[in-house]
Length: 261
Image (cartoon, rainbow, N blue to C red; front, side, top):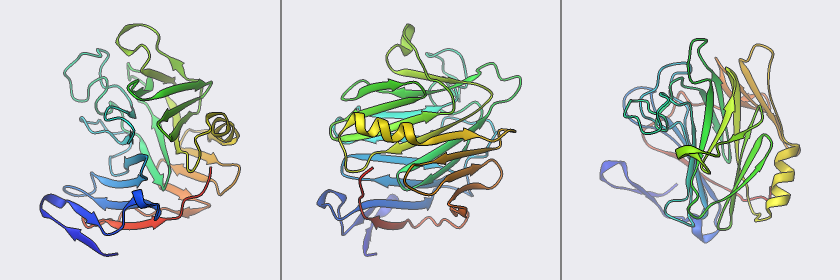
């Protein structure tokens, strides 16, 4: 693909997602070693990015391993993390909202990302949580699923257990918790639809579950191959591994056709 490169790692493409030419998918390595293996899915409406290079089960710093941003409002963003301390106003690294006390296994393929958490037995913060901004974002909570709509974009967080909406304190209205030592999340970006009810029905028909020992998370969409996130081996789709180890600092970029979810 023809691209223009600039200093500081900035890259511009001769095709623009705003023209309707397709959704952009990029994979690349950032920094030293495998600590940041980044996957990006971007449309003219929404961007989903993950870091699959962080060591699963390790102690994080302040990095986000999953980030969701919407184009309709400058503050319309969301993420998942495991809090590194109990004080929402604290200054630790990792903190309540920045970084992960226990890092998850991460995998992403195009518009779907998955996180598998195995929290330490003595970990005092026995939950993971979603931050979802209210600025420009609608929230729709349905049991184990949080649907977000911002402008014409839709995205869903689906957990392996029921989600708890925080109703008091600094997290009121922006925080959703998933409890348990072994748990998983799937993040699904809607493509080509603004119908909240239709999208919520689709996500409800997606099956998400853990195996008996909590080392494998499986997402089975109603219309496609199963996604498996293994604690040791990483992500596979339809049984085929999604490679990450050979990522270069030069982005591997493709434009994929849009389809309706």
